[in-house]
Structure formats: structure tokens, C-alpha cells
Length: 175
Ligand code: K1U
Ligand code: ZN
Image (cartoon, rainbow, N blue to C red; front, side, top):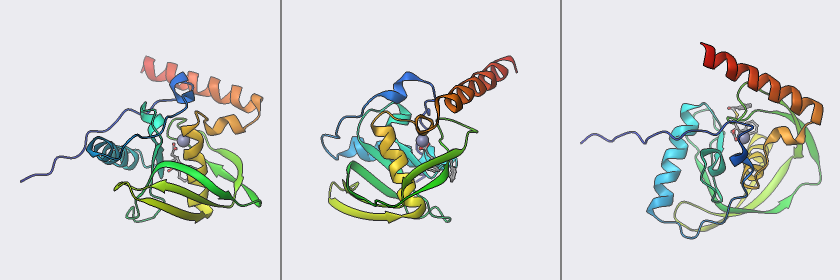
């Protein structure tokens, strides 16, 4: 028997207004959600990302997949995540986003977090994270609130990014 690879999902691109939708809680962790999780991991890996929020694939439910490991063998699923604690200490680090391709800039984030969430079996977990995992969780939790990382940057930087992306899109259409 051959296992079919999960179908990839389309990732919304900034400034698509759907990226500003606030996600609603997942009502039940069932086979529909588990199939979505599988497709989100496949989509994230195919795009060489370390995280993906359901918002980015136009599903407006509180669901995140993450894998910050080098070997891509430490998948983390956060369903209905809520912060329990954010460290008062912050650090500015470089971020990217699969919805804002080719743009990287510094964002100030808490250096450690604790999050409560359900896993893919529907079990409640409390996860402590630091370094890249903590940054990635904060970035993805922002997506669920309809926030894209460029909204942490100055209005001037945001304008420059928007025109750079519009130019790239015009060139792609002409090619
Ligand atoms: O949400 C996303 O679009 C995924 C995003 C996650 C993320 C990367 C870096 C900092 C915070 C959150 C990405 O995976 S962007 C592409 C990427 O693989 C990457 C970019 C910069 C550093 C490390 C990874
Ligand atoms: Zn992102």
C-alpha cells in the first residue's frame, strides 16, 4: 500500500486582508483537525518554514504547527493556545514569515514563554519555551490574532515592504 503525501495548502501573502482575521477556538479535536494538522506540516516543510498558523492557510481557527529542530523531527501542535506567562526580559531578533516572502527584520519579543494548549489528541499541555521556539510561538500566536510580524515595524518600513512586495508581484506576473 502506498501512503499518499498530504495535499499542500495555499499560503496567504501579505497584504491579503484575510491575514487580519481573528481566529476562533477549535470546537473539537477530531479527524478533520488532525487532517488539517497533517496538511499544515506538509505545507510548512515544503516552504522550509519553522512554523505555520491556520490563519496563513485561510482557516480561521486557533491552531498552530511548529518544528524548530534541525532534523525536522520535533513537531509541536498547539490547539487553542493561550499564554500563561511571558518573561519580562525581551530581546530583538530577526524574523521572517512565509506570508511575507523575502523580508526579514528585527522584532522585540519575550525571551521565554509558557503556553497552555491542547495537543493533536485533545490533551491539555503546558509548554515552556525559550530562544527560537519562544520567538516562533509568539510569532504564530500573533497570526491567530490577525497580526503579521511587519506590524511590529515602523510605518515607514511597512510601506517600503508593501511596495517591494507589490513590485515583486508585478514582475512575477510579467515573467
Ligand atoms: O509564520 C510563519 O510564516 C513561519 C515563520 C516562522 C518564524 C521564523 C522566524 C522567526 C519567527 C517565526 C518561518 O518559518 S519564516 C522562514 C524560516 O524558515 C526562517 C526565517 C528566519 C529564521 C529562521 C527560519
Ligand atoms: Zn508568519
